[in-house]
Length: 229
Image 1 (cartoon, helix red, strand yellow):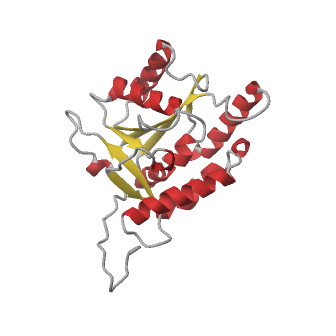
Image 2 (cartoon, one colour):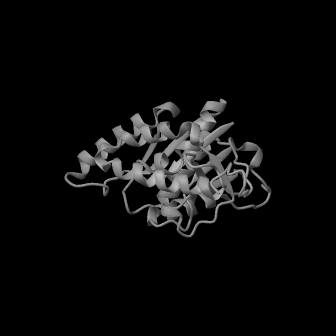
């Protein structure tokens, strides 16, 4: 399969989608990545230097999937002009993915929300789309959970390349979010899962057969304690 992950900012793919992408890669699928904005608001000092630094960080962090496509849309202004949609549409048409992963339309950041809407407008009628978890899971009701325990350290390593973002704070974030999503499936302590949402629309009624490591919900059993509870 040809998988495309689209993140709004440098580091978004690593934080919200890296686990499932690593599993796709491990399975033998081809993975491409697009970073929509230049990340120029994600730090202090010169914007020009920050843009260059963040692009280098993303290139290192996502190197297992090849070099990312950088659209270089101004940070905080994604979707402000029609040209943004054209840039994104052109890249999607070149890549020709079988499945797209991007942000949810109710996430906390305007760039995340606007990217989600643009991707939906461009591709939802001919490419299935799954939406990644929101920041801290707010306004998000997952339809699919992916067991990323085997690649969690790779996800953590990818985040470590983002030195300008003080990556230690994101280690805490993914530890909390991914362990919580695993616990929702009653997976034992020490396991990790990423959560996604798929909205059915013609002609796509399911994406289950495309997804790696879909979790099996572990039933509650007070005697055996083989799950979280």
